[in-house]
Amino acid sequence: MADGTRKTIMLTLSFVAVAVAFTLLGSVRPDGARAAYADVWHQPGAGPSLFTEVKKVAASGAVAGNNFGVSVAAHGDTVVVGEYHYSLGATHSGAAYVFRRDQGGPGNWGLVRRLLPSDPGAYDHFGRDVAIHGDTIVIGAMEADDACTGNVDCDSGAAYLFERDEGGPANWGQVRKLNASNAALGDYFGIAVGIDTDTVVIGAQLKDYGSSANQGAAYIFERNQGGSGMWGQTKIISDTLGALNDRFGSSVAISADTLAVGALTCDKGGLRSGCALVFERDQGGSGNWGVTARLFPDDGLNGGHFGSDVDIDQDLLAVGAPGHFGSLEDQGAVYLYGRNQGTPGSWGLVGQLLAADPGSGANFGDAVAIEGDTLLAGAPGTPEGGAVYAFYRDQGGLSSWGQLQKLSASDAFAGDGFGSAAALFGITAVVGAPFDDDACPINPSCNAGSAYLFQQAGVTLDATLYLPLISN
Image 1: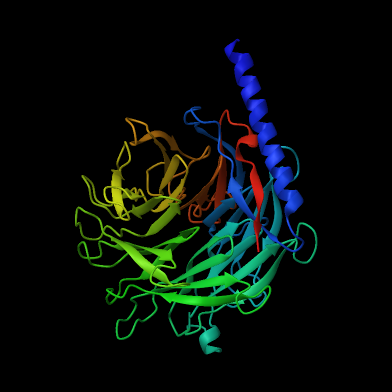
Image 2: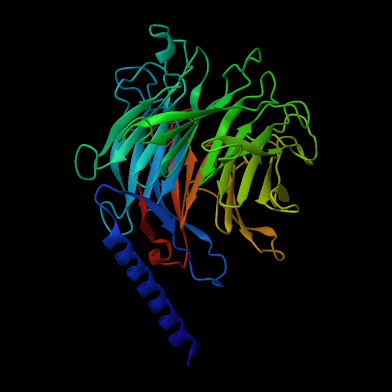
C-alpha cells in the first residue's frame, strides 16, 4: 500500500472515531448538564508543526493608551483579549473582547462581543487578566472598589463571570460578580484569574496575611456552590511559610485538580527571586487544597521574579522568570517542571529554557503558555518589538525541550510589547502586543494595542476538535 493511501485511510479512521465519540457522548448528555471540553490531539508521530500568523486583531474604535492585548486567553475556537484602560462612562473602567474562528467567513477571526462590567468604575481595570474554559469566561478587575465604596483608591478588586448564550444565542452575558469574602483595601483581587471546567481561581497579590503585608492570597470559587447557577467561594489559599511582600497570587493557573500560584517577589531563593507553589484538590482532606510543592529558582539569583507567570497542563508546569540574569541583565528564563520528575509525588525540574538569542532586557518568560508538546515563552523586550519563542518536546533529545521557532509580528515595531501575554490551545496561539501603535501611527507613544493569532501550519482543524463531556 502506498504511503499516501495509508495516511489517507488513517486520517479518515481517526476522524470517524472522533465523530462517533462525539455522537455517543452527545446522545447520553442529560438535560441541563454543562459541557466540559477535552482536547483531541494531532496524530502521534506527526512531529512538531510550526506556527504561522493568520490574523491581527484590535479593538473596534481603538483609542490611544487603552492597551488592548494586555491579557489573552484561548479555548476551542474562541479567543478573549483584555483592554484594561478602555473608558466608557468611567476612566479606565476596562473591557474585554471575544473573537471566534470563522466569524465573518471561513478562516476569519471575527469579533463576537465586547464585554463590559455591569457596574464600571473609574480605574477598575477590568480586563487586566482573562481566562476561558468552554462556555465560561472570567475577567479580573483588580482595582474595583467594592470593599470601601466611595473610595476610588480602595482597590480591593473583583472578578466577573460571563457565559456563552446568556441573554441570547451567541451572546456572552454576565452571570456573576465575584468578591473575596474578606475583601479589604489594596488587595488587588483579580490581578490574576484562571478557570478549568467548574473551578475558578483568583489571585490577590497584595492581600495581607496576618501581620505580613502584601503576602498575597488566592481564592477558589466553584460552580453551583451555594445553589444552582451560583459560584460560591470554597477556599482561601496562601503560603503558610510565606512572608512580607511575597505577592503570592501574582499569577495563577489550574488544570483539573492541580493549581499553581506564583509569588514573584518572595525571597526564598534570593532577594525577590520569586517562587511558585503547587496545590492539589483534596490534599489534606476532602475539598481542601493542600501544598504539594514549593518551587524556587535553583540558581538563587536576586530579582529574577520567578513566578511572574505560570501555566500548567496536566503533568507539566511552566514558570516564567523574566528578570533572570544569565549572561545579560533581565534576559529572562523559563523553568519547566514535571509531576513525578525524579521522585514519585514530587515536582522536579525538567529543564531551564533560555532563548537561543538572549538579549539584555528581553524579559523572556514574561508570559508562558504550555499545552501538550508545545511551550510558548514571551519576550516583550526584544529589539524588534517583542517575540515569542516556541519550544517542543523531544527536540534535541528524548524528553528535551528544544526551541524550533521564534515568532514575531508581521508588522513588528520597537516597543510594541509583543509577547507580554500569550495563550495556547490546540493549533491556535494568541499573542498580545499592548503597546502597538496602529491606532495612531504618527504617535510612537500611542499604545492602543493589538493581538496576533497564529495557527500551526499543516495541521487540519479536525486535529483539535473538543468533545462535550458529562459534567453535572
